[in-house]
Image (tube, rainbow, N blue to C red):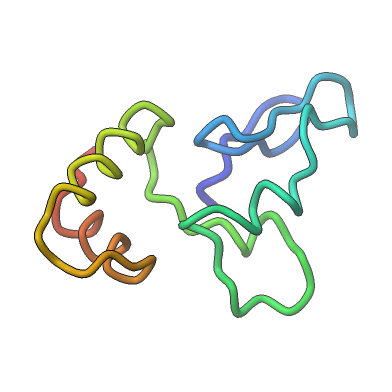
Length: 92
């Protein structure tokens, strides 16, 4: 669900793709989601409503801040580690 809902449909809450005309995205959602830390990699069929696990209210700017903060920790960096870091450190 964390997709940003518009009159034309769901957009990436982090700004990786938006809808510029009905049914047309500014970037390929499949490609954008495949590289996103918040994409549910267990979804077999691509479904925007199910794949996005971004926390509600998270913006691209705040995501970058969290990535920088996580990268500065002394732990071994991983996708799962970042998701745990976000759970502990992100407040809407």
